[in-house]
Image (cartoon, rainbow, N blue to C red; front, side, top):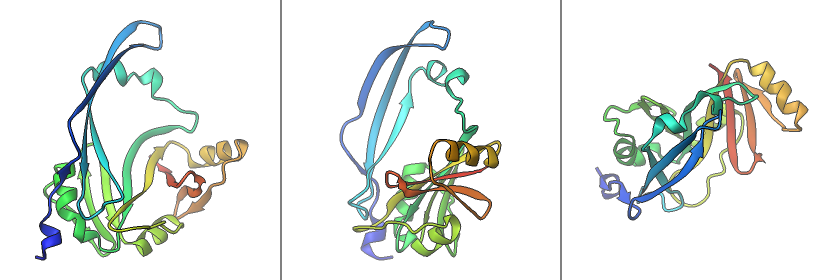
Length: 190
């Protein structure tokens, strides 16, 4: 194992705590409070990561606030790109807490209870999602979010009605990065 692969997650500073008063959909006042912790992969100096703890999740995850016209139900995953995904396996394990990563010819994946975090090669990203990854700098880049929706055709219609350019690719609906301010948004069947 070479030195770069032995590096671990580096903390990005102190935990950042904040809170505020909020309201439920019916107007009932509630307390919202969060703690953010930041991390970085020393092999990827151009991207930063964070985790968020919800101190009153019952006040934040209100089903009345969790609906969108596009029918998104969950965020089943995030996709990152790196020339050599395995250079980042130690970071991915430490950041996600998943000790048993799934490896394949296209990259590595951590399956968490809340979704998948995957790091894939640029060619694999293009083949999977129909757009090229904009890989600049060193290490991995955060490139896409995946959304599970009830009806892809309905999302496509909504995009057309709102002037959002999207394209079908391998059973998914993809909003390319030049439309989504640098991100790739992927809508797939729930």
